Image 1: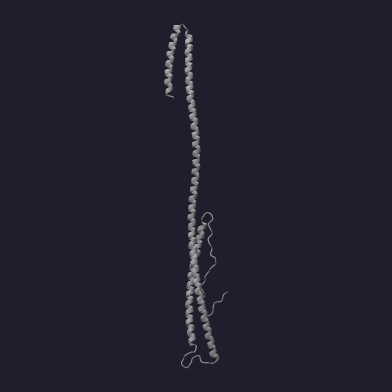
Image 2: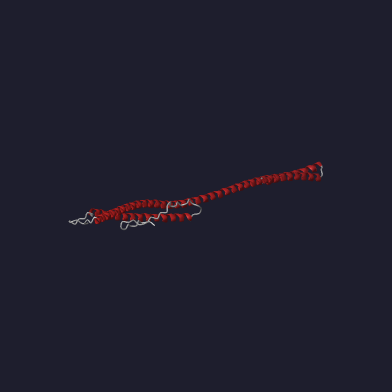
Length: 256
């Protein structure tokens, strides 16, 4: 449109010039006045100007339509850009949340592993404690047997003394020799059982202390995390295993 307009204007100007010359010649040939010829020429020029103005206005209208269309497209693109920005923001927030959740789960997994270790040590310690208690019960049983033999020996000696019977016969043998032999064997067995029970108690106590340390470590780790974690399972019993006191003179220690 822009390149064709000057050419048309030039052609139209040439036509107008030729027409004006022809009109002048025609007017002169017909005897008309030059004023009428000029009026006709001005009319032709006015018509050409109106046509140029109309063409220019049409061109401007098209440009205005194109501009309006481009503005609408820009508005749509701006709206689409805003929606994309919102999606990008939501995606970033979701990604950040997932990263935090992953970090959180890793921390929970670490705390859970510490709890599992503590619980495993506790169960192991309780099993050792049960074994130690069984051995302690066996030691107490043997010590009770020793006490019973000691009592039987004392009763036999008392009977011999009350009957004024000799404690040793003419061959140097005592009627209480077998009973003393059983008593010595029982004391040896009871002493061995007590040592075994004490060692088992020390092992169980050490393992339960390790469980306590591991439980405290898990609690501290859980406490350092943000938010609330499932509570750490406490030991169901307040276990404080102590070594059994050795029996003296066949008498069990008194409980306070």
